[in-house]
Image (cartoon, rainbow, N blue to C red; front, top):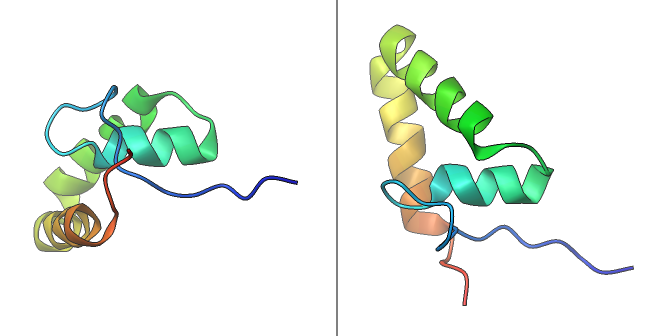
Length: 63
């Protein structure tokens, strides 16, 4: 059994590759993850921005 790793995507990136990497890890469409972040940005501005920035810092970029 191969172990999945979370990486920021180089192929499915718009800003930092966080949403593309999350989508790849959970096997869903990157557009869905982006919509979740955009909607949470409007409703929970400080929290969603902080979460995205933390993920951008701590998730390594794929090789």
